[in-house]
Image 1 (tube, rainbow, N blue to C red):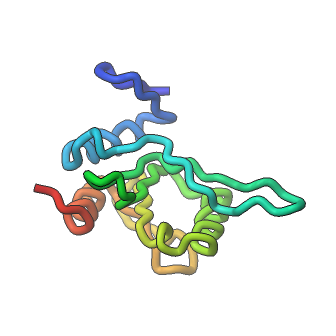
Image 2 (tube, rainbow, N blue to C red; image 1 turned 45 degrees about the vertical axis):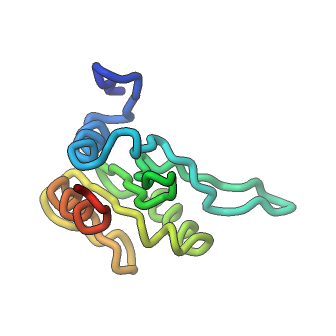
Length: 133
């Protein structure tokens, strides 16, 4: 685990910390929510609900969700499955997910049009999708 020296925020990896710091360069820290919990499958009579804890959520000044950002060292089948559940149950949230992968080249996530971003791509994505002053 990595830990920032100025806050009591813990990160699962140095990569996740690097992504957080890049987001902070462009977004007020008060608007960044860590480990944002999203229901990806509702509870049924047989099975409990399933949740995904997205690494970071960016909210507006009105606390309305604007972006979900996931830092990944590599893409796993479990993560791809969680994205599929999200796309099925909350397509409006699936559209605002950005996956930031450690590496220079974009990688297709699945059969959809979603691809990964690197840190520079994340900056462009934030500038394009958020009203940053």
